[in-house]
Length: 468
Image (cartoon, rainbow, N blue to C red; front, side, top):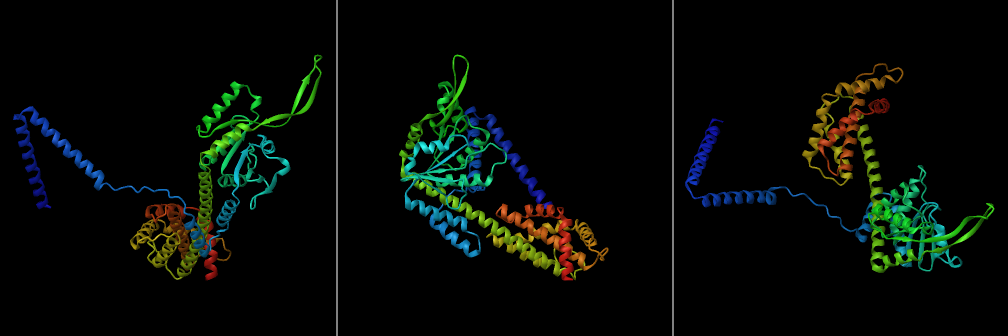
């Protein structure tokens, strides 16, 4: 230490001497020399900062979104099926994609509120005598397809402003928009809160969409312009707005000179040509691109369903692992004297549990990372052993005839609580973060220990008593 201090003082004095010498020379030198010297110093400093950002500063990994490769997706579905994952929904999307490719139909998904005029639009567009109607396979009766030659109109469930909307039906409808080429959103006024919620979801699908203002003949030109402006502003001006009238029936009230009224039901003229023109402009850009875009959307939908099935499968398997290792910990702790505050006694078992959960999620942590997790969670146990024992002993009191149970059974229940908390903490880390994070695992471990421990302890006590 004395030697280091002497060297440090020597360096400081040497630098001080040099700086004072330079300062002295600059005082006597011409102004242009001082300016030039200062400029060189600033350039060297700037170059040093540049080198830091380019060479020394750690580069952040930028995740690039790659398009889904169909061949790789099909291989992934086959691989997950071998693992036991339920791939039925993902496989169904690929079957539907193959079917739509072979038929070469043009699909328009029709969305709108219950009274927006969807049925009238379909009647005005398709000749009734030649129309074919069928329910989409695998969906509810609320989604129907009206087909004329190669044009297929998918009539999606009508939106209801009621608070108790069916989320499952809405999800089916959103999925169906991904399978279509173009989406037509039908409304007869400014967008309601329910319509805005669905519009936001449709925007996320990136699908080409046309907004059709139905019953536009009810409004004056100024009112039409005001509604169009509101519709465009609420949709970020991304979609064209077409003014149409789908016709149908309306009740007209006539009043004569004497004030007597009479009602008459009459038909309204239909005018859907502006909507057809808007759709044609979307299609005219490049029909082949629309097909590729449709295919990509359906592949993305299949990938999402495969991912969801894989998540559910992994969590189910992980929970089974946690239960299995918890049972082993209870069994192994029956002869233990006290729960190990640092999991030394059951360290090997804990390590295997962590490794198994990580392997399930295709994560390969190093041995030192696993040791760090066990060490950090073990540190929390040093201050929680008495609490865990108290909860375990209290749980055993609920079993008649045992009284204040002590010894091996109490310690076994304690070990079970520890392993259950550790397993679920590791599961939360790897499933949400994608890595085995020691700090996040420790925090979740503490929450699990302080959570619904009483109910868990009773279940573990039953297990311990059966083993005993």
